[in-house]
Amino acid sequence: MKRTAYLTLYWHPQSQHESTRIRQRVEEMLERYRLKTREFPPDLDFCRIIPLNANSEKFKHLMEEIENWQEIDDVNLKIWRSYNPSELSSAPLLEWGPTNQAIEDDFYDLKEDGYQGGPQASHRRCPVCRAELEQVRDLLVDTRRMGQRDLSLTYSFEIILSARLARMLQEAGFTGFTLRPVWDYRKPYQGEPKLYQLVVTNVLPPMASPPTEFEQEQHCEVCSTKTQYLKHTHFWGRIQYYEETDIYYAPEVLEQAADFNATHERIGGLPDGHPLVLISQRVYRWLKEQRIKGWSARPVYLVESGTLKSE
Image 1: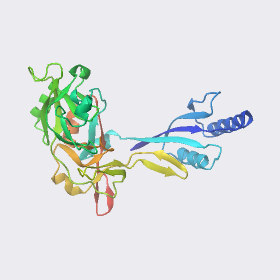
Image 2 (image 1 turned 180 degrees about the horizontal axis):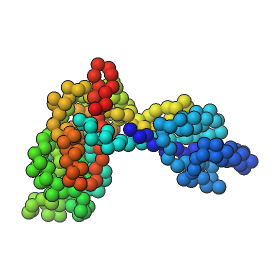
Image 3 (image 1 turned 180 degrees about the vertical axis):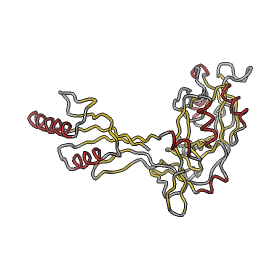
Image 4 (image 1 turned 45 degrees about the vertical axis):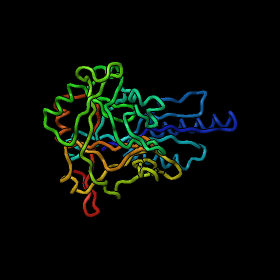
């Protein structure tokens, strides 16, 4: 696993003299670590450094220096994870999803009546937190927004497929999902649908937690919907930074897994928290072989007897 750090430093001097002094010190630090910048405007007090390997000793020593440098009073640090082909091709389960959100929400749900769960809405919603409780009709969207894509998301994270990809998934014999027609709102329920909604039907048991970590939990007392975020808030000394954590399950989950799986957990905040989609290695390899574009995946890990085990 590769961890790439995106780092921006800010300082707020009280005078022009102090600004010049801090800039000179920042320049010396950049030269000492042989770092380049993506942005270091002469008239503004910030510095955006080119992406760094967050696993490197250079990054570790740089962060230790910045953490003790009081003149740097604001640090924006995000660490993004990426995986090599070997890690992806050996994972028994992978978190999966389209990489774009091209489809507007359901046509009627854009209206206040629909969003509140009125008679035209595609989903029944909780009257208090507005979380989606049940889908009650097919989605009506502007199908033109799909373009030539095979995969996309609505703004509410429903997965939309082209008719071509929907047919291919059925013919491949994959398990754990069903298809629901998606209609153009201008001519609903007429002719053959051009798009389909991928509805994942196989729900896995809760993740192994720990070691999976969560934060920002929300709970609705009326409908009992619970949402939470995978932990992404971390600290390097006084510096807060963003990095998502991994997902873990007990090995026994493989006995209950299908090709397409929904997590028991709803990830996000109310009312928009939703289950994640996990796919089997069989689906991952098939998507690669068929050269389907517009999706990403990351490994899910298995944990047994308190020992982390990456498959």
